[in-house]
Length: 419
Image (cartoon, rainbow, N blue to C red; front, side):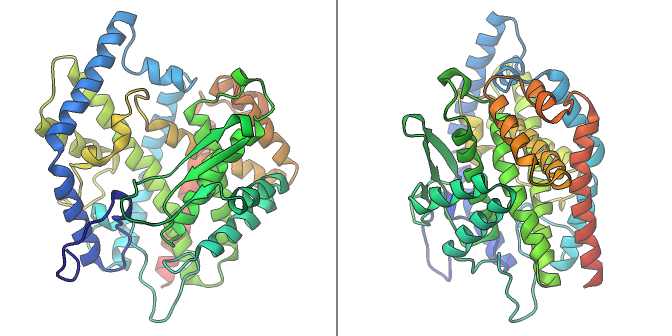
């Protein structure tokens, strides 16, 4: 219901970024009710998908993490090191939650508050806010990427100029964004929904990062152009980091800077908490599926437990979203189990790589291309070690990346204190 009228929206149009909490809450509960209506069907789907996988894994003599690790060309040691380091360090995000809750006049955030914009004085406009035009977003992205690498900037400008991006905000459109390659044309196509927000601009940069990754590999033999998902997410989140860091440096006002830092800290929440809860949930229900099918109610319980663990109890007691498993389409991709941890891997790897790029200067763009080329023919660990000299099986590099997350939180909390 909106203003007393019943309206229909596609999943991609249901947002929780309104400055009005009543709107965020209404959208959340309306969408939740709609998703709950198909929960039994979704529970059947997850039981069948995981059951088929486990039957195959039993015959192969492997556990339920062996295949997703193989698909991402990484070791269990690297995965355990990454999650272990995150678990040790991500409590800094609770300070971000507390500071943002105070800005919003709340005791604690709920699930639908985490994407809320920071409140601004009357008449104050943030350039990355809800009034951002498509032209502004395209111009900012291409200009900023050019500052890191002229090749990346020229490529991004061409992709937007030549209509490789479909970003119309229309009814009936599915949620999310993705990039697909056209190898014989050495081109890509991007699908997303642009809503006029800084988050939409980040999505544009993210998908252009994917497209550039394919572009760098375009002249490699066919079997050396196929890179795993975790390294694919490195290229995309790296492009986001370039754009967001430049926006932060150029922010003309405290409120502008605070808004950008809010988006950066929210990324930390997404990759270190939201993705972690997805991993914990999927890991747990695969373990329990060995004993038989799970009930719809059990899926709700597992998701709530996973969220409370991943978010370190940082949300309001009634502010979690146990039905998240119904709406998250990644759980239903039969050919890609654990379509979650590669995002966190890519996010942290990109943060560390970008920190190295800032220290090294313009010449690092060549190393970056070498890294992208290596993703087509090496394991994740070997690709990183051979090009930028970092060992992903040790916590040192992950800690460097998490240092950046903590620095952003510190900046956000300090600015909130000034206000």
